Image 1 (cartoon, rainbow, N blue to C red):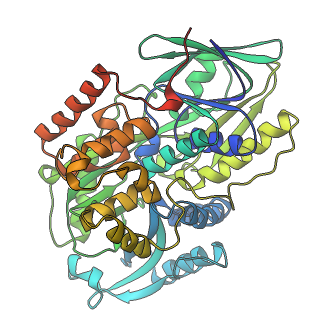
Image 2: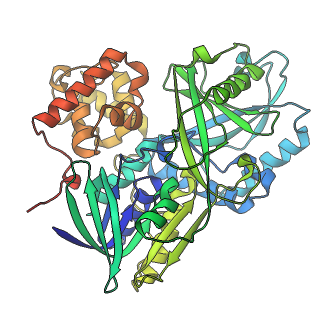
Image 3: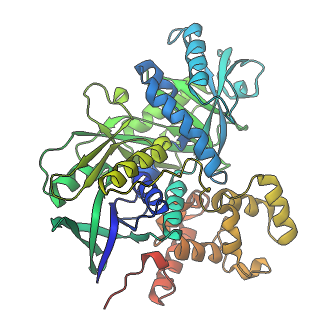
Length: 510
């Protein structure tokens, strides 16, 4: 079967999902294909921050910082269920940066942001008195507190794809674009899923949002040999048992002038990252190595009273950032993005290079601006002030939780809070007609019930235990190995018995 659309987006990371949502909201017909899972790679492996990038001020990237700070406010408004403000503590070390430089940098950081913002201004603190100082070594006396945002990165991607689907886009997860060429001014593309089923797509415009694979897609699928160089930089994170008992996060300055974050994570843990390691190619094995683990443990031990070692790491993850290759040290390579519209083939194709999760919406808007201009369709942007992402249509989280306690008095408060932070108002759909905990089905541990797994399968394109345990949630951290295997077996049983798959992922075949 052949599908005719205005736009085919290849790549289901944050940029691809954001472009699909923006485009379909402007009235374009859209299909998005992703060879693996949504946010399977770079977009689920970030530090989970929506921030301007304080350290980029030292590289004089004022435009990037200002753009990111403006977007930080937009994301907090569009996705209040999966994002929230977070305060960061920066302990001062005089031999790294003088006090005046830090004060000036934080003042500039505050001023570069929008005038009307929800986050507080930065200020100095006495670490001998402040709650955040208790976990630090006693020789730290002065510190600074500033505010940024936190987001569940993989969920941000899924919700953008979901919103695109709800607005009419076709979302193909587990489908690879194997071929694309222009015939009579139209892109003719072939998609192939994991079972070998193929479908043809005719599109007026193509978007290459393949992230680390953007270059190889240009060469292997589109036959382009000349394209901007991408520098692939691996960033790794480790997860440790909780190192402090408060809600502040930390930014640590390292002797090599990199920074490392230590962030409260999933209640019982601390997330520490990241590193910068050059990679040879997108298909190389991506995992934290011993040197990176030691680097991050050393960062912890340089600041905290409680010492850690590699044996304390309970989980780790690594992602490859596709950065614009400008030479120099990996930590100094720009995190900004570049859009390249190519019309030489007889039909437009837009290539997306670089970017960061904070600026995904701005990137998407600029991308669709170029696409609509190329197609001769004067369609206005809408996402900056449009409707929130699915589940984010509420103004007061505490009031929503209170209404749930009255509506579902049998729902444990801790579970209600987690569902609020994952699904927001779409928890209605997850619970459905359930009238008791028994109606939610099997409990696989850590309050992961069959009803939640079914919701993720049917509405969020989850196909494997990894999709559920490590991307759409981090419940895998709270389960034993046997329990994780039980989740895998349940999903395999659903597949075996042909239970419903996402409507947007079904393919009509003759």
